[in-house]
Length: 333
Image 1 (tube, rainbow, N blue to C red):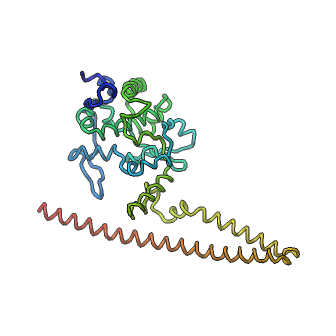
Image 2: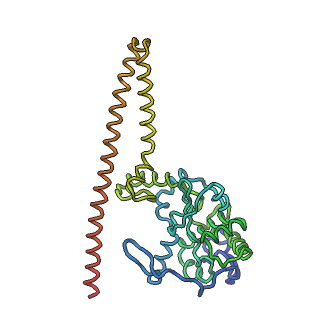
Image 3: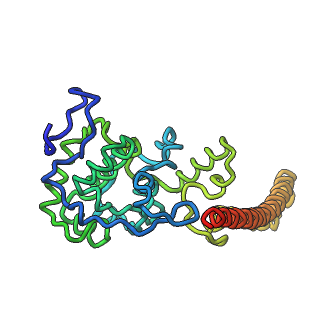
């Protein structure tokens, strides 16, 4: 098979060797034009991509957090293609860039998180050397390309992608269309068997991803996953309370309105003489006072627990980092 030919279809040979998902003459980036970051964060330190290219590409393309909750992913999104960029703008969604593949196409309120398309996915030689040697990486890379076939459908989407720094600015529309035609001829759009299973779903709702992650964390007893959820949108306690306890303010407003109504009712002669209304008013008053007190105490206890948790975990993490660096320093001496 020549280097410009497409892989055999599944019904021809399921064991065929992995190849780039587009023809060589349709590539948009040359190998010498690819520039990787000098260093990227990994765990609590920096790592050089060239020192472990497989790990670098895994961090860039794989979606391990979504894989752990994949069986429940239908609760966070629909198994349909994502909306295009111009439709996202029409829905008043602001585009936020993220380099984490797990967060790609995740939306929250009026925000949607998108991972810029890496240059190397547009290079045929890079696929041959690095991505075609690992099936998981190959499928994840194909999935990321497929997501760009979703969000960049028209020329207006393409221009939005360039101005939002999602694709290289030097690309032109005609070349992009030819590239996508070649890529889509490789992917079976009905079964999506060539792409990672995460890309069977389009946009995913962050609130539900956080809930699913915390439920999963309880089953595996992971305090860290339960505390932080899928993706933390703020590290401020004020924002945390606003996002998670806004309903409490609504309840208090309703209770206040209810008690005011009862007070007006008790001021009338007819209801003053009604034992049933008197008993109901007494019961609702006690429930409101007790519920309000318990709610306030619970919020303060939660804040105190979060403060203690973060303080202790920070101290333990600091000790771990110092010990690790001291050990490495002794080895290098």
